[in-house]
Image (cartoon, rainbow, N blue to C red; front, side, top):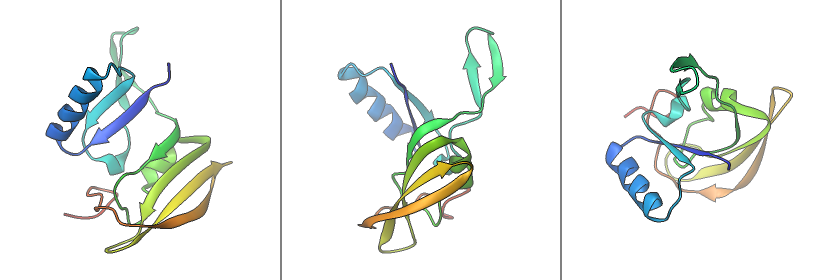
Length: 128
């Protein structure tokens, strides 16, 4: 079964989402509370080795659900070769929904439509 990884800035929202998915019987989602602009944390518990192991996550698809001034570099680094990232890019007001594809370490971008999202606050997003 494929896994979904989600990052939420606020613990209470993450807990609420976990409860809803639990009631629906959805158990393939990994949750993390933190700065989504930094991507999935590089450290993961490795049960087989029973120690903290360095882990470089690579994702087939990444969806950013808050506006960013530009696609955060850590997320581009975590995207697999041939992977897609969808992001609302821009500042106040209207942003452009962009689909970017990673090909041989090169990123190609395509405009989809204009959108309005709240700002992604964080190290590689907007300042508070």
